[in-house]
Image (cartoon, rainbow, N blue to C red):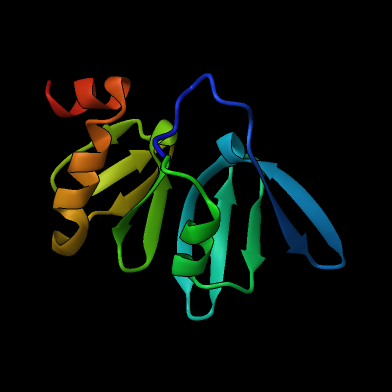
Length: 119
């Protein structure tokens, strides 16, 4: 299933200390693996969840793409791409050789990002 902009909003619930926070998928910018934990970098806050990066990606939809063993990005948050990294606001996320081709192939499913790649 490919993410379509007109689909209903999707949410992810995560534990944050002693509470549960509901995050709109659009608020999630990128994910970073840290052993059995994943750092969720949202627009306004960072959350640490006890789940692997691959486990988190199974819970999310196609707008989230792995770019490196330790990183995945929300395609809608991509501002700039070059051959080795992705710019997401002030953050630079690496693209490894292993994930580069599948990442580029996924980008072509998103017209706005496809224009960035083909400029």
